[in-house]
Image 1 (cartoon, rainbow, N blue to C red):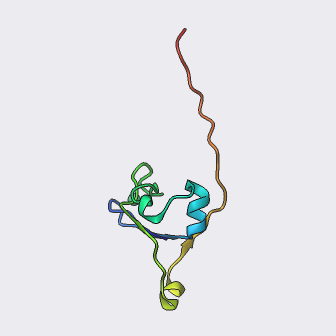
Image 2 (cartoon, rainbow, N blue to C red):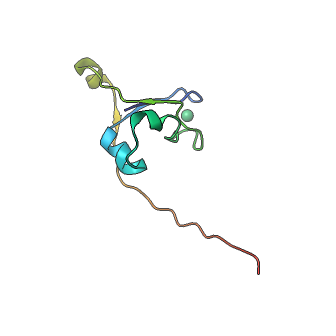
Image 3 (tube, rainbow, N blue to C red):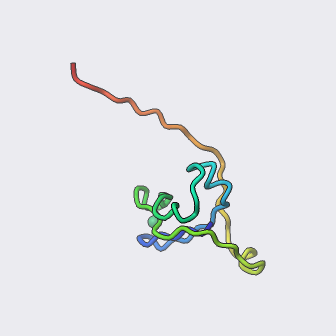
Length: 80
Ligand SMILES: [Zn+2]
C-alpha cells in the first residue's frame, strides 16, 4: 500500500496485511485519510492506495513493516 502525505511530502509503502492488522479490515478506498503520517503525527495521509509495484520498483522502495501494536493507557478524569 502506497501512502503519501501532502503535508510532509513523504511517501511510504506498507504491506496491506500490516495495515489491516494495525487499523482493522478496511478496504483500500476507505483508507483515504485514515493512516496517520509518522512525521506529522495527527495529520493523515491524503492519498493511500493499493499499489502493486513492478519488480524494478520493488527493488528501490523500502517497505515499512509492522513491528508491534502498542496499546496506550490514558487516564480519564471527572470532577465529583
Ligand atoms: Zn506527513
